[in-house]
Image 1: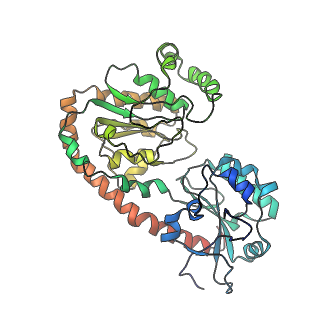
Image 2: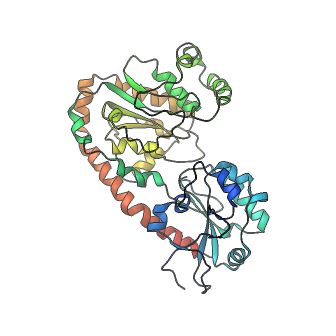
Image 3: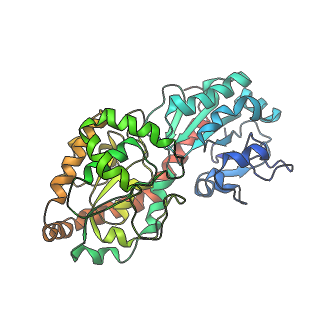
Length: 403
């Protein structure tokens, strides 16, 4: 059996200009946020460079197994399978014979399995009478899957070292004008909650919250009611002191209503603030996902808290990162209840930012070995661990005969 390559089949149908496996151009153009001429963008350029061998014809030797990758990039793709998703007959024959597996690739998100990924795969299974073993999932969600072979891979950790600034070490000795930075774009309950709580403090901070973040005005009808039910003691303060001021903005040239600054070139705001309050994409306990947000304080040398999924701090520790235990109360990380976790994070934040700026500057200098360690670990994982692990896992999954 040949196992030296991971063959990665991308359909180069001459009638298509957007080479998204399984979908015609008219559907592909509605799936993607932005269209790119290079199809590698949709499949992840770094993975093709470091992990896969791209092919557009089926290998002659049936022992040369290969993947038929389908990038799952929008949640609505789960609803397009019945009418708009097609597996070519020759590929389908290879799937049934065991030469090919469908690789559902969602490396930019940590989609909840039951709501999104499972529905998408089950619709394909139903349409083509396939089995669970015909699929492999590559995802940003760190949770194991109960049915499918699933491996973690995220583009965000890999890309963040490129945003390192040589000026960062020089900023540790200076008094910073802001006690914290908390950047929020799309309004969500956990972000609205921490924003409301932070506005009760007189400590200076960089705090942003978009009006809609490009997700429409109807977002607020749901969020307001839910927020008041879950945080009734903050309802009055929110109505009187927060809602009238939304959007909360910071003058750095980025408009969060139209731009999602995944890769943020405006690093001055990080150098001018102490504690980084990360508000991740989601805060529920049905997934464990890190976007670029979790790695920004690591690359910009800031202590941080993570308002995201429970277990986030524990997983970063497992990966070798230092999360500033001893400086910041991290007991919130074990709390499964979102409301309680938000309140615990607010207490931890308050304890830290209420210190005088001079004391915080001394703490930043004291933390320098931890900042340096985290940056080394980030580069190592980006350059070696992620690609090597992903390649080994996908190679093993490709040749597995059952789960």
